[in-house]
Image (cartoon, rainbow, N blue to C red; front, side, top):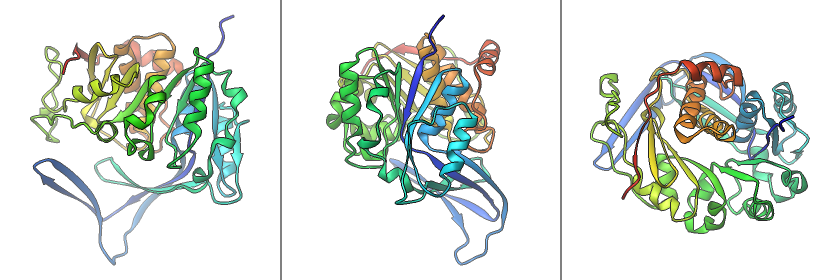
Length: 362
């Protein structure tokens, strides 16, 4: 009988409340080399809330639920607090995720986020780190982690966390264990040189475009067209990149200098790019219609990783990630739309996503 892959997701857990606020506006500011967007609510005013939805989030819990739905042996490693903690655990257990390695602290509440949804389907997150701040190396079940087939390391709140160092030690002693890594701002800001050892053992690195630029201190090349009009988002199959997608090849090459096996760089509604150091692939999003974008990155990463664990190539893994993310952004919350293995297989067979590729060159 074939063994079910054992996956440990390591990182944060949050209790989330979604708010649909009325009377909001979006302000956009542009300079020659930067674009910023700001969510505006009337200063000193009373803003009517149209709907409130309670749900769950956090990179490690999102990915653990995704892996469980895909049929893997999913285990969550993280920390919860005295308040909201039982709700988080109950949700994970309902989803079939092992919670034996969850640690509890009385020092703070479970991490908590208030998410304000915009009328465009995006969101602004007010995040309180809570118990995630106290997640440290003492909370790692090292002996159990050594039994893993795959480790998925998510954002770590602690700036000088020793968790990556311990994981690197485990990976060196157990070369068959593979690592997927979605670093947080605290790690990204320290730069790739700081993380050379872990990057050398990273099978799949997940970063968005801005994170990739910060991590490598390398700029991406801006696309020629940046408009919200869907007519400008036509993907011509004969060309590697459509006119709206930024060129991240220089950033890709920088990551490969540090030994990463596969690099995935996402760019929201502008699609995703992945490379194994030889070729670079581009995949567009399925639709620009979005209910809520929270969890899009986690769903993409878990879908992509699931495909690689199942033996799919990079092109098909991109499609897996895109299908999972598309399902999530069309529902509220980071977990509601995560696909089961049967749902994914059905969508994969009928999909007509155009993935293009080219040789990776500077």
